[in-house]
Every structure is written in structure tokens, then in C-alpha cells.
Image (cartoon, rainbow, N blue to C red):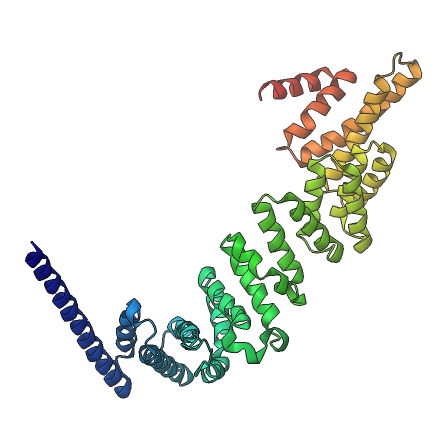
Length: 406
């Protein structure tokens, strides 16, 4: 039994030895082949793949020669592509930018090998300065690659380029360049990264560089928009509203912030806040009728009917096509009539006043109906009550049939 066990062990050791020799032989052969490709300047992608295959083996992970040969293969592909583009020869632009990215990927990965502590525990990278200086010369093509893929609406690919461009600032390989202090394009790159994250509905990607993106003053309101939408997507209402408020305070005329703030406050029936929002917007643009319409809606819900009537009459005089101005004006008169009718005992004089209010409400509500016939849910019930109180039988019957048909 012992002899059999020893025989099996010897067999296993021999098999391992043969396997190791075979791997070594294959490695040696592939290095020679890749070297030939590099020297001839052709089949460079094959040379890259040969080296990558061996680097995927954990036994070769720290093999400096393999890393440097793989980088040379990528670098030469990049240089050949750059020359073709310079000479305006036919070439795949996307492939060129992807080669840029691969150069950074290879050398940043190798830097962690190069900077590994030696047996004495010392860290003495041999290639960091040389490789950092080389990549620094070509880093702008990471930014350009991002712009290229944005133009192609390939936002996930574009994000990867901008993210890598920004990430260089935190890589030891580029520490001497202090990009956060010296690179004026960092905020712009961060804006585009935020934009690409937003376009792919990737909340993590959208928020990753947003602090730096907000330093890009040219795109500040757009960045706040993407930020607000992302918070909404994440159901973070507090940050959503906070971002809307900041955007509105700084850019009251930017089309995104005002309607969403109004929508939020309206959903909470916080009409004082709706009124404050409208007043702030009007102060920024006194000619904007949309702002004034929102103001009258807030006033209507705050039961300031006389003010609504006065301001809506002015709006209609300015633009008679403003359907909501007719509606708010009609509802102001309608509400006044209803309030009179709620008196415990309606006097003859009050009844006369009520009738007059309903007649005014009818005029404006019927006009609103003509402007917005599809908004039956808004005009049907008020007109029902108006026709009932004015004893308008035919009109009442028609509106009654409409309501019952729903």
C-alpha cells in the first residue's frame, strides 16, 4: 500500500513538473512571437493578447517583462492609429480612443506591481516617473474620447472615459501633476461624467463626481437639474426639494426649477409657498404670464377672490387665450356666490348679489370650456351648479347628461 502511494505521489510530481515545463516553454515561445510582432510593427493586437493571456495566470502576475511588452503592443497600436488620423486616412476613431484607455489601464495596473514593497519593505517604483510623464501627454484623449462617445450617444462608454480622466487625480502615478489644482478641465469633465450617469439612469455614477461638477459654472443649472432628478429617482424627497430650491433661487428663469417647485408645494396644498415661489419668479421677470397665472391659482386657493378677479382680468386683457386665467376668474366669482349661499338666511339683497356672481362665473367658465373642452373634470361641476342656481333648464340638462355619461 505504501509503495502504491509513493508511486502515485511520484507520478503527480512528474506531471506537475511536465506541466510547469510546458507552461514555461509556451511562455517563452509566446514572448519570442510577441517580440517579433513588436519588431515588425504588425499583428500588434495578437502580441497584446499573447501577453494578456499569460498575465491572467496568477503565477505570471508580477512578471515585469510581460507587462512592459503588453504596453508596447498597445502603445504601438495607438501610435499607428494616431498617425492615420493625422494623415486623414480611414481609421476607426472609437478604436483609437479605446486604445488610449487601454494604455492607461495597463500602466496603472502595472504601477501597483512596480510600487509593491521589496523584500526589505521599501517602496521604490522604477517606472512610475517615466510612465506618468508618458500618459500625462496623452491624457487629454481620455477627455476627447468621452466627448466623442457623447456625440454618438453612447453614454455608458463616454462615462468611463470621463471617470478615468477624473480618477487620474487620485492615482499615485500622476501625483506630481496635481490635477485637482492645475487642470482647469476637471470640473467640465465632472459635469460630463454627471451628465452621462444621468442619461444612463445610474444614480451612483451621477452622484460620484457631482461636487466637482458643481464647480463648472457654465453648466451649473444643468448639473442641479440632473442632481434633482436623481434624488427624485432615489425617492430622496428632502434633497430633491432642497436642490430645486437652490436652483430656483440662483436661476429663477431656468425652465426646470419653477414648475417642479410649484408642483411639490401644490401637492402639499402649501399655497403660501406656491404664492412665494410665484412672487419670486415675477420679480425676476415681470412680463411672464405663466408666473402670474400660478400666482392667481395660489390666491384662489387662499380665498383672496377680489385679488384673483383683478389680476385675472389684467391677464385676459393682455392675452385672451390664457385658459387658466378664465378658469381662475370664473372660480373666484363662483366661490363668492357659493359663500353667499351658505348664509343661514339669504336676504333678497344677498340673493341678488349671488345671482350676479353666478352670472359672472357663467361667462368666464363657459369661455374656459370653449378654450379647454377636454378638461371636463374642471368645468363640468361648476357649470352644473351655476345653471342650477340660474334656473337655466336646457343648459342644466345638457351638463347633467355630460356628468352622468362619465
